[in-house]
Length: 239
View 1 (cartoon, rainbow, N blue to C red):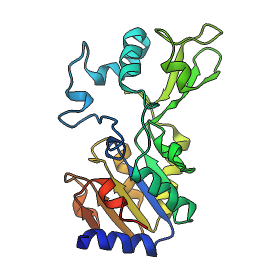
View 2: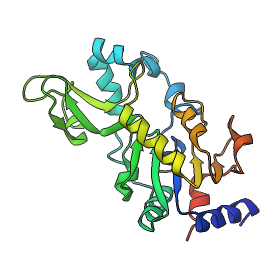
View 3: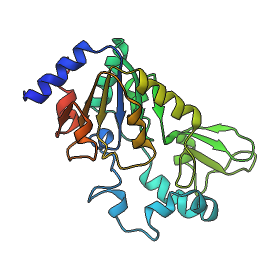
View 4: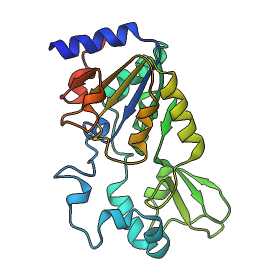
């Protein structure tokens, strides 16, 4: 065990108001591709750039092409949580973790047992009819033929924050409140380049900040402890 991981374990043990702020790197170890790495979605070839496909305007204008991409690349139902998801859920059950703040939309934190999860970018698990507002689960959407429609005939939209859409105010307020209350902020699996989500860590004012990411980030110099390893390697050491 390295000196950094030993210190990380000690910080976990002495802390009682932990908040975990995570990104795509949390779920890549479950097999879900990220967006920005050399093998990520943004570096694959499609008829349209993924950033355009995952925008509000494209969804409204070219819904069929949106759903073709969405069903192919955003279906997280076939994936399972990994050690990081499960260890975070255990820390919450032990009363040490206040909340998970995630940029991911895959629902794996909840699948692992986490209760208090602030999903900044929404979730594929929730879908709503744009006409009548009826809820539809992910199975309904991903198993549908073509563009999913409600019984009322309305178009179903995933509760996912697309480009050019605002974040949910209630979720943002909850995430910021949790971060301000934390005595230990663990940032993991994120390059901290996605705005505005990355700006929320500036609300952390007490205790210590740990940053776990395979590559360096613009915030490394702000952290009390930086570990350049995979999350699974680090979290598997927590008792």
